[in-house]
Image (cartoon, rainbow, N blue to C red; front, side):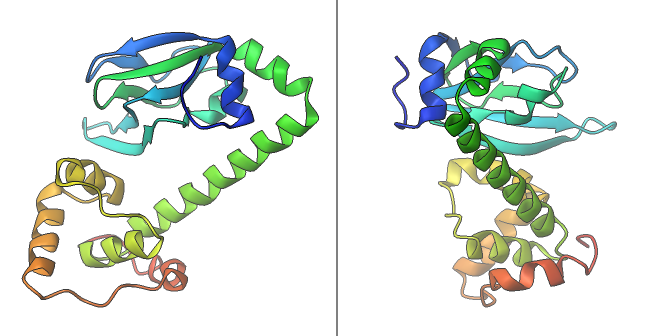
Length: 200
């Protein structure tokens, strides 16, 4: 049985099977047909895309208790890559089984809809943060959204989430440690500041 949060959506994956992943192992590729849904049981899995120049864009780093690429339940192909950020274990369920279970349980379907709505809110917040002008503003907006600063070993993933280079993020964090920190940006200001333009 899946040993993660007691959530009815995640309980669906009790019908699935375990799949271990090594660090950097690919779970699915962009453009592959959607045949399965996945929930992270242990470890972390990155959802990522690559630009035409080969640059990596981290969309989400999913941990235990999270369903991966939720919109895949309604798509023909995966629109991102799923890659293990560390040694991990996922629960695998055929997408047809997943959808049939939702179709048979209206209450569960409403819970799933709420989860998808939350995902849309998160995506909008991430887009607004990435549209802020400076590294400091992006970091303040991240923290104002009640997202904790991750351990040092995960700062590179944070930089990718913010849409900045890890060198730029390290410089900003060093500046703050030295006492030159600017005030935190209120979450209510994020949409307004997002109109200023790209990072310079």
